[in-house]
Image: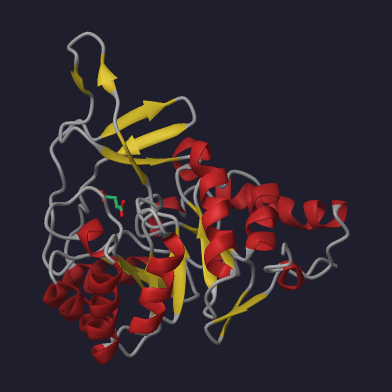
Length: 303
Ligand code: SIN
């Protein structure tokens, strides 16, 4: 029988498939479609210290192989996430989840991470230093190695949960960024967030997205994500979560051969709310097709 279990940060995941932050709400919203307890875990909607209404509309632009989003970290703020959203999630999902934390300043990140210290539902924090859709924060922390390292070091001083740092692909040297956050104390790395892109409305000659640019994700970025996961996982000694354009169980195997211990599925959930379920259902057959008995055995096997 195919063995899908993965050990990661001391926790056993029943399979490596996790919906990516921002593409699956707080998780419970999808429980009307299927029993979400089949998921390896859930990376919850990006959370900030204070509530955020997000960017003005339009904030989505469709592309041939994906979409551009400029949501702007819309969320009810960490206190409500803990007291309301995660409570609703706990009623329909029994495992622990990953909290995704964004911010505008070092103290924003530090204070938000501190609030999750006592939250039993949360297994680890994914530190989002790669959101391209907010000014004065987000990706600004994720494109300079020293700034990123210092942020991670400050967060690590207060964090009780393991810290997974989510990297931006919008840099010239992803390995340099990965090494910097590991020096800062990152327990794991997730990558990639979206690539900065734009579309223009030919009727008006103006950008479709209200704030002009946004983050491009979807199957079009899969080869870029795979390359970056490969480079990073072979350069650092912390585990890596791979994401970017994953659509199928075949893509999951590629990501794991490249070096991902776990994978996150993002934009595909917006195309098909059953995407993660289909991938999990298909994995045993696809493993059999390639004579893989234990999924853990293929992590980083591509040299
Ligand atoms: C957003 O809320 O704008 C997207 C989050 C992200 O790209 O990190």
